[in-house]
Amino acid sequence: MSRAISNHEWRHCLALAVGAKLLDVDVSRVVVSIVVTSTEGQVTVEYGDPVGNMDDRAISERLASLGAAGPIAALPGPDAIGLLRAGAWDELGRRAGLSEADLALLARLGDGAAVQVAKVVLGVLELEDHLRLSGTEKAAKALRDLSNAGVGDDIPLNELVPAEHVERAVAAAEIQFSTVMG
Image (tube, rainbow, N blue to C red; front, side, top):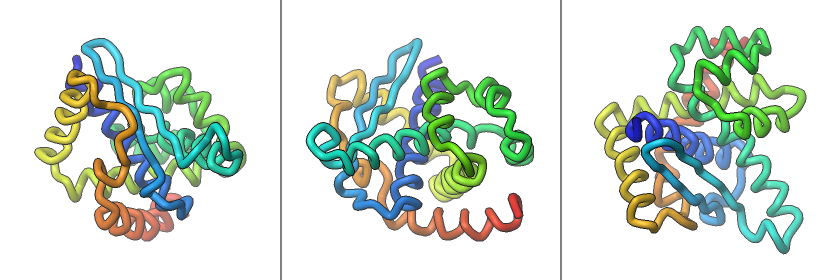
């Protein structure tokens, strides 16, 4: 079960990287904290100083909302897009294994949530395609190892997901978006 959990959490990390690019924020200021156990997982994100700076807090919250969409990429593409178009958030959450907290974060996206989530999901799919299965499995295992070693706090996101891969993935996702959601 911990493999499935770490894959789920890895997709949250990929979605955070895609979200940072879509929001055009300085990814070097984004840190994540990761916990993966045999029964549950969690990824939290902070941008800059979310306690002392309200702008940084707003960006952190927006990133968290976009990052919640990552595990939707595990669904077959037509299913995910169909559910997004229909606004079937509960069904989407159930099929993707999203927590109530993930669903609440997605709800914060407000109007246009389906568009934003579709772009993030397409970006995650592009990143996974680039990494291939072996790379995704290795990254997910690395998350488990970091968490088990107790060093899963305040990891720079750009060290987990290199920016050059994210840029290519987001560019490809933008092209795909017009085809699948157009």
